Length: 100
Image 1 (spheres, rainbow, N blue to C red):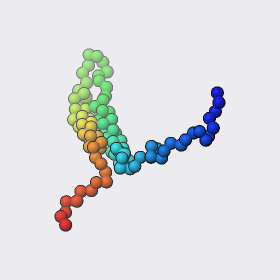
Image 2: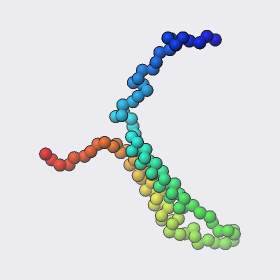
Image 3: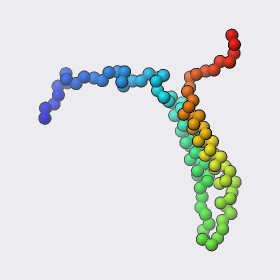
Image 4: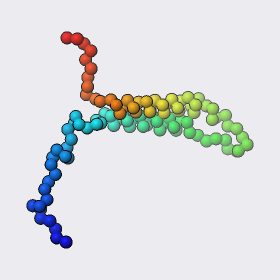
Protein backbone atom coordinates (compact mmCIF):
# COMPACT_ATOMS: atom_id res chain seq x y z
CA UNK A 1 0.00 0.00 0.00
CA UNK A 2 1.46 3.27 -1.05
CA UNK A 3 0.70 6.51 0.68
CA UNK A 4 -0.56 9.38 -1.40
CA UNK A 5 1.57 12.43 -1.79
CA UNK A 6 0.39 15.53 -0.03
CA UNK A 7 0.21 17.21 -3.42
CA UNK A 8 -2.51 14.77 -4.56
CA UNK A 9 -4.82 15.59 -1.65
CA UNK A 10 -7.00 18.58 -2.37
CA UNK A 11 -8.46 20.62 0.50
CA UNK A 12 -12.22 20.80 0.79
CA UNK A 13 -13.83 24.00 -0.38
CA UNK A 14 -14.49 26.53 2.38
CA UNK A 15 -18.16 26.92 1.48
CA UNK A 16 -18.86 23.29 2.42
CA UNK A 17 -17.36 23.58 5.92
CA UNK A 18 -18.79 26.90 6.97
CA UNK A 19 -22.43 27.75 6.61
CA UNK A 20 -23.68 31.26 6.62
CA UNK A 21 -25.47 32.33 9.77
CA UNK A 22 -28.70 32.94 7.85
CA UNK A 23 -28.69 29.39 6.42
CA UNK A 24 -28.57 27.63 9.81
CA UNK A 25 -31.98 26.34 10.87
CA UNK A 26 -31.46 27.04 14.59
CA UNK A 27 -29.57 29.68 16.50
CA UNK A 28 -28.02 29.27 19.94
CA UNK A 29 -31.08 31.00 21.40
CA UNK A 30 -33.28 28.24 19.97
CA UNK A 31 -31.09 25.58 21.56
CA UNK A 32 -31.26 27.29 24.94
CA UNK A 33 -35.04 27.55 24.68
CA UNK A 34 -35.32 23.87 23.70
CA UNK A 35 -33.10 22.91 26.64
CA UNK A 36 -35.33 24.85 29.04
CA UNK A 37 -38.40 23.18 27.59
CA UNK A 38 -36.79 19.78 28.01
CA UNK A 39 -36.17 20.58 31.68
CA UNK A 40 -39.86 21.52 32.06
CA UNK A 41 -40.98 18.25 30.48
CA UNK A 42 -38.70 16.13 32.67
CA UNK A 43 -39.75 18.07 35.78
CA UNK A 44 -43.41 17.46 34.94
CA UNK A 45 -42.81 13.72 34.58
CA UNK A 46 -40.90 13.67 37.86
CA UNK A 47 -43.84 15.37 39.59
CA UNK A 48 -46.20 12.75 38.18
CA UNK A 49 -44.02 9.85 39.31
CA UNK A 50 -43.98 8.30 42.73
CA UNK A 51 -44.49 5.11 44.58
CA UNK A 52 -47.73 3.35 45.19
CA UNK A 53 -48.71 1.64 48.38
CA UNK A 54 -46.23 -0.43 50.36
CA UNK A 55 -48.55 -3.44 50.59
CA UNK A 56 -50.63 -4.90 47.75
CA UNK A 57 -53.76 -4.88 49.91
CA UNK A 58 -53.33 -1.28 51.05
CA UNK A 59 -54.51 1.88 49.35
CA UNK A 60 -52.36 4.97 49.20
CA UNK A 61 -54.43 8.15 48.64
CA UNK A 62 -51.22 9.97 47.68
CA UNK A 63 -51.78 8.92 44.05
CA UNK A 64 -54.60 11.48 43.84
CA UNK A 65 -52.55 14.44 45.08
CA UNK A 66 -52.70 17.77 43.30
CA UNK A 67 -49.01 17.53 42.48
CA UNK A 68 -49.51 14.34 40.47
CA UNK A 69 -52.83 15.15 38.84
CA UNK A 70 -52.54 18.89 38.12
CA UNK A 71 -49.02 20.27 38.48
CA UNK A 72 -47.08 17.49 36.75
CA UNK A 73 -49.24 17.26 33.61
CA UNK A 74 -49.46 21.06 33.41
CA UNK A 75 -45.67 21.42 33.47
CA UNK A 76 -45.24 18.70 30.85
CA UNK A 77 -47.89 20.22 28.59
CA UNK A 78 -46.32 23.68 28.86
CA UNK A 79 -42.92 22.15 28.08
CA UNK A 80 -44.26 20.50 24.91
CA UNK A 81 -46.13 23.63 23.88
CA UNK A 82 -43.13 25.89 24.40
CA UNK A 83 -40.90 23.36 22.63
CA UNK A 84 -42.95 23.83 19.46
CA UNK A 85 -42.58 27.59 19.87
CA UNK A 86 -38.80 27.25 20.39
CA UNK A 87 -38.48 25.23 17.18
CA UNK A 88 -40.55 27.62 15.06
CA UNK A 89 -39.20 30.92 16.44
CA UNK A 90 -36.56 32.74 14.37
CA UNK A 91 -34.52 35.24 16.37
CA UNK A 92 -33.33 38.50 14.93
CA UNK A 93 -36.53 39.54 13.26
CA UNK A 94 -37.83 42.60 15.06
CA UNK A 95 -41.35 43.70 14.43
CA UNK A 96 -41.93 47.39 14.07
CA UNK A 97 -45.56 48.37 14.41
CA UNK A 98 -45.00 52.12 14.37
CA UNK A 99 -45.83 53.91 11.17
CA UNK A 100 -43.40 56.56 10.02
